[in-house]
Length: 363
Image 1 (cartoon, rainbow, N blue to C red):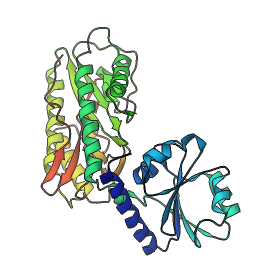
Image 2: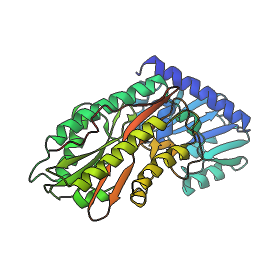
Image 3: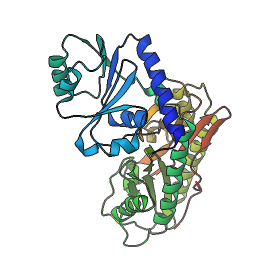
């Protein structure tokens, strides 16, 4: 069973969600995406639906998880389904009211058809990003888990950097990252590791290949893990052998841009303004076209969640949010550089969670 602090946090969140449902005239809300279910309940199984209705929270799962759910949840009712969810909801046991909300981006056509057939006398209301405003602000117990995920991943990063050498491949390093994350106690990677050397570093989301590392190249390593349901995410770029003056120059620009992003982040700031400040710095250095992705994204139970920090962002940065700051410069056919930290935003600004050096490591 998890510490009481996180269970109490979840109980309070469910109360806040009921208030929002009431304000929007929703009698019931069916949650169908697994990350949100884990965030609200602690349940980590692969089959789950969550009903918020009549002031109660009910988790539906199957026989495989009837023991696991007892250990991972507290303060909610659980039902082990023996029939389709739509049939169970139509049984009359649940106070569904007349207006039920469904997560528009997490309900399949088949699920919608079944619900309509069984509960056709109700109004179904699609909702999107309903939980973002709550998930965005991290409780101290959530932040503690992310700090531990960060520390674990940094231990792994230090180990795998020391393994880079002649004959070692990108796949070798990526496999070691995954293995060592698990070996040290993580649930697993928070995403497939990115290990990209030389020209492949110019692909922001390159898949590790059988390529070895040539002397005089930069290597982008982007990795993260999950600890007790919460993710980490970090990127460092290292040099294998002596690199050129231009590579050093680009590295320094990205390093300065990343620090600028950390220093500039403030509570209440428009997310797109933070992106613009860093983007303008890179553009002034002559590499504006080489930075094509957003500056950052929120991290929590998912490695990509609210808030988004990019040119199209519409929200503001709120106290308690955790997000990445990860500028990059990518020169196709030549090399790429990215540096990424997660930051926790407080009243005095952004605190980087990573401690791993951002000075250029030369192997």
